[in-house]
Image 1 (tube, rainbow, N blue to C red):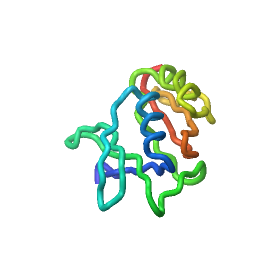
Image 2 (cartoon, helix red, strand yellow):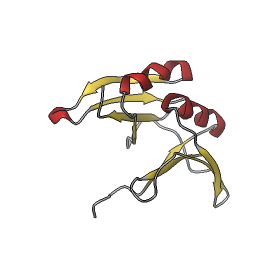
Image 3 (tube, rainbow, N blue to C red):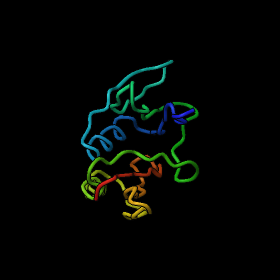
Image 4 (cartoon, rainbow, N blue to C red):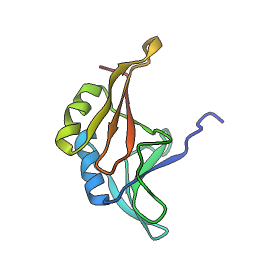
Length: 124
């Protein structure tokens, strides 16, 4: 198994609000879909090379700051993404932190839904 993660789902209480938050901080467009009668907002990804994921709203999906942490790709500049978090309604809960062996930087944010989300960038 060379790709242990195949899909992720980030719970949302208000899908429109969560979609606007992630679009604003990451500078991407999420595609709204309905799968198995459940509304989703799908992050852009290349099916051939990248793991996909979405925001999801529905029964059994509860935002949380506890538990597993999903790390989203912050692109070339973690600072640029972190600079947009507060204005988009989120909070930085772990500031930018350098990782060993030149593998980049991470930070944790609390999104508008109450999830703790990791951000990773190989650049500053």
